[in-house]
Image 1: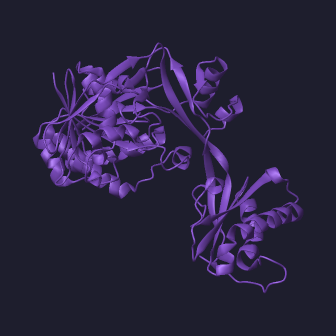
Image 2 (image 1 turned 90 degrees about the horizontal axis):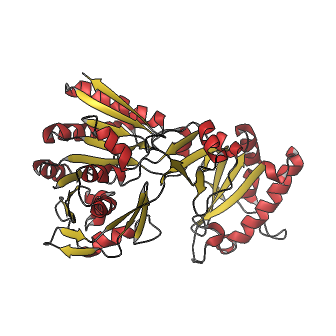
Image 3 (image 1 turned 180 degrees about the horizontal axis):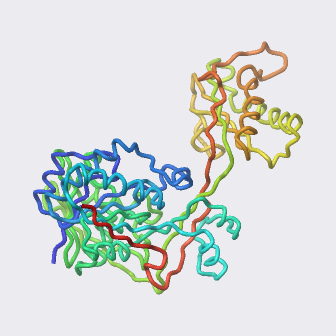
Length: 452
């Protein structure tokens, strides 16, 4: 038994090579699988239940894949639809799919797998000790859970298989693991379990496992002993190095990968170049777990935010930027508490130096000799009005604050006028836990739609 999976790109919205896609369709795949999102871009998309990608661009790419599916006469599946996989994002993707199907004049059967969770039910599971924290999980209370605006469970291969079993042409799945949409069909048809999960991990981001990683389209053949990966774009080649290295991608352990229902162990895997393009992998092992668990992701409101940005070019201030920032932070924070009658816990005021420590903050170790530094002030408070008011108190400091009382008053450059830029409601991740299920479908729902 051999199962051929065509992966157009690392995610819908990143575009794909049309020539390479045509080669993939000519190779007669058994399924086309593409990821729709992740948590890479932070908690706001899950908190709001929206996609990070433009609808217009998403529609064009998805229309091309729906046409490719019809030509290949095989299922098309997308996981983590709409970036975050929440029900609202799934509905957004479903609306686009229906619109395209009407325009293409082709009836389609659509299976919709939903992953959103009722916060009250999650709180109940927590109280019943059916949830386990993962490493570095935040402190959790029932109030934290119920404050989440969206919670999703990450579906595995079992849930995707249920959707495939409906005979749907198109499967729109809520939050899934990146590998589940690729591994499901090979597993269902009896391919090597270790090879199915390992190949799915290698193929999750398209041609990122090959040279010319931005080229996108790859083909993976799964069988009874392992898998073979072949990139399809011009100038893209898989090598034992590029394929084995992908186990390091977004994974804390280069040999172990945890999934719903067990874990993948590639300690004994062998990578063999079949030619200049394709790599064969065998020896991967799937280890089932005693209990079936799925990871939960939740995001909740974290206050309203206002940002301001000033640019420092005077060498004296560039060289002493952190001292300048620390002084402003202390003095402005004291002023906010005095003028607005707030306590320190009612707001946060942070200034990060772009070009110096904006990425890592206090963890930064490099000390570059910059000629220009950007200072971005970040104010967070419980209302938008309060956040903006504190931003206005910070404004004069970023424009004129001197390093010492003795020197002349400086003037720095604001990036925009007005300098205060409201960001609106912000969100934070609140869950990093797994939920134990008696049945893999307990946390998921499946709907089948015939679109004429």
